[in-house]
Length: 457
Ligand code: ADP
Image (cartoon, rainbow, N blue to C red; front, side, top):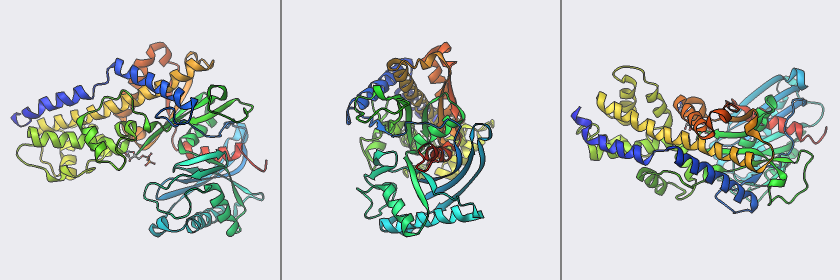
């Protein structure tokens, strides 16, 4: 209809600016490989921190006994207990619980926060009288910036995500938790401190020996992979028997060769960390809805996308969520009924069929770019492994373990990501590369790392 005529050229412009043809993807993959190498050479060598995880023995399936995982990464923390029965029995029993952290504890003292966590852990461990005779061993997934110094120690650099706890920064968070358990008389110890991406890789590896890479695509994004110690110039320690270790890219900070639009630049400028986390702002769940909102607002204001009605709600940052984009893209009705109701409910927008079609195109454009760039990032990691180590992963089955709400719940995102990987690798190699959803592997992964790094045998 005539309503959206003025918006049509704006859509074309958006599609051009977001285009990710094969040469763009190739360049992103190559830059990712280069940044990985530079970050492995020396700290600060590239946008990628390439953090050594100190995880140098991966689960084999032989692990036996009762182990715990504690996952602290936001306003909830999760506790998990798993009973492992070795190669044949694998996971005999698994139980988990979620505890929300009271608001006042988020700005309390370090002792108060860790005492609360220790008590919750003790309650969970003693439930059902299932407490082990020996010390309980914990894999601690801690999703805040830490400077790790060994598998069971790490200094908190700073709290993020709304935490303002005093007295933890600069301290070893493992010691903080162990001391709290001492104060409470709890016979448990942290054996492994891990990042959630690393825990996901370990969890997936337990079931499948071919897992080499793990990627999280949720609110934020990150990736890690198994690297040979002799390919890490900045690594100072002694080589482990495996000669391999997991390296955490912190790939959200990547920034090279990305096709960006005015909407990306404006969103970045208005963010709490301008100029940082550019890859994350282009591909992860926190931002895709917001990029689409900015494009739609522009089309409404300058191109009368929704006629004369000026939807005020659409000018509120972050009103449109990535789940809304996904909901709209699943609409199979002829009049795009679902698109219409999402627009009305979320943004207060009245729409007709032709404007709904344009809205869908905007969603698809933003999501397609995101997923294809994520795919190029994965290929960058794989090409780095293939080239620098004699592991020859392209000639045999190699698994990339995926997790996170965005990947799990956005079918178009998954499809575009896989398509881009296949385009980049070519038909033969891409048959060997398996991109696999590893659901909630991080909890069990952390418990497994407590087992492989057991202090008590
Ligand atoms: P987090 O990354 O916050 O630890 P998740 O891995 O569960 O937790 O990811 C949650 C994110 O996934 C949300 O912030 C949102 O961006 C995205 N997401 C959740 N549901 C959907 C959905 N239905 N469609 C698309 N994206 C979704």
